[in-house]
Length: 479
Image (cartoon, rainbow, N blue to C red):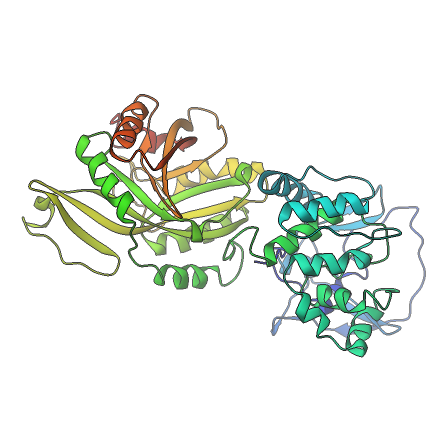
């Protein structure tokens, strides 16, 4: 997915936003002048009439002056879900969390492609090396590297070259005209990059390319090429519930013969009581340090969780990864009979006295904008999505609350909220199974894998799980 802000902001609306910060403080040294304006200008966003207010809720107005419409930037930015502030030192309006996207871009390029954070003016050699690490071809150039001169290599990395070269000279020139002087050789590639948000409309095309901008452009191209994050949207998107539902309805049972055979043997041995089967094609590929993996089986729970995050002011990128949850099934749960199968549920007899249930569930992958938001997640769930003796039926909780919610992260988290265990990942091609094991349990799981499937790769990964699930895993408590 092409990297976008929390809410989509079209180029036309950006042109309006980048006008006058009416509702922000003005420095005493800021120059002032008298304007003749036309008032009574309204604002419509996505077809709906917007009510413009200041920070206290008082209604404010937009106006028209000398061919430009001026709107209160706070009213527009908040309607689009963006934070807004005034930087008195630089005398500038700032939308979004300052530096947050840049920091995450650089961290992602480092984690997934081995590209060290870039700073200062970026050279052609540094740009070419980064392009190659992502999977593109080496590039050369003369003169200063700018967004405009980098556009051809950026478009190639995004697999958009044929589209760019399909532009007519007149169409490309018209697109680029408002953004500064672009050489004829670069015009088609710049126009294509602008039209497809590879280069944001706010970037100075002819300025020397700095490390922050270069990182953002590389991430845009990697995302468009399918090499970056794989996600369905933001938790704050107005249609995120519909996207979750649609994605969930596309899931069915899937299988891998070698891993299923191994899974049966592991459960029979008693080394683990169950495991999850997953497929790489759904992997979110999120930034590890900001991500929480949240497991559940009911999609309504996931939809309500999005609303809960919005209420708490937490925003995350969202991916729904299907998993086949496998665990021992007791016939007494269904009056001694094997229940009927569906496209997402099946009970299989694996021995004379053992049945295993195969059920489609999901891991909700959440990459938060900041580590502080990630750290706040535990309290949100404990308060709003966990049953307890005080609320055994989930009173006051969101739909589908569990006694032992399951969420984890791959970075060390503090006790007692989190406890370290192991995700014992066993791989067969693009499929993996994931038995969870405490440090005490892990040797038995690894031994069983080595004995029953020596040809498969087994890689225990340390993860940190929430305390309630850890108590369940160790039979310490039911809550």
